[in-house]
Image (cartoon, rainbow, N blue to C red; front, side, top):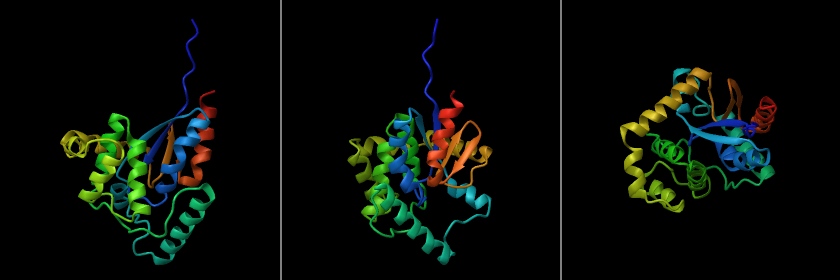
Length: 204
């Protein structure tokens, strides 16, 4: 008996609060679909790992931060990703939007939630971790804020988020976005195409 070929998979580790993840949140799904790759969305606390590694990205580094915003703007223009200038930063202090992303990932609507969250942050210039903004994000995806917020705050969902962060630590992740195929890691939106190529080649 011939079994149907399995689609290659690529894990997409991201953190709502990561600036470069804005680009991948808008780009990754379409590119993965074009190449026949299943993209698995995995929200995790890169902030926790950066603190452990004593690796703050931009805060307190004004020269690097100026470059980062210009670089994001250039890449957004290149790929047709929405960008309306420098948004508030940092955001989501309590990682509430990320807990909700975990809830959405468990229920299969994480891509819609992540794009809506980044739209609020980058285009509307609102913190996606704010209560009112988070409710608006959920509603914009067609889900009931009351029905989704309560489970996202429960220990089970937060524990799943922590387990995913633990897995990221085990893999040696240090930034967001990161794409993972097996134990191969590809850090940054500019490595998205490389990661997809690797996933396709590894499946053959």
